Image (cartoon, rainbow, N blue to C red):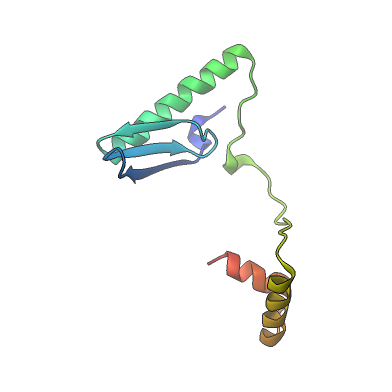
Length: 107
């Protein structure tokens, strides 16, 4: 497993007054540091340790989001009034409901 393929993010934690490194595929892990660079290095090192431990115990290792295949389809349930409003808006714009929803989600 290549830990470089995981999805990392660094953000500021007002509560901790430090930068926090995160990994989307390991949502329970985080790393606090005084600089963004150190937070990123810390979370990457922590993920590497966790992956190595999981490999040694035979646990399944999360697949990186970047390596997953996506169909481009998902279903969303909305209240009937929202469905009607979206269908009306799509008709007024002369586009399909799917195209309207896709455009709104892309914002």
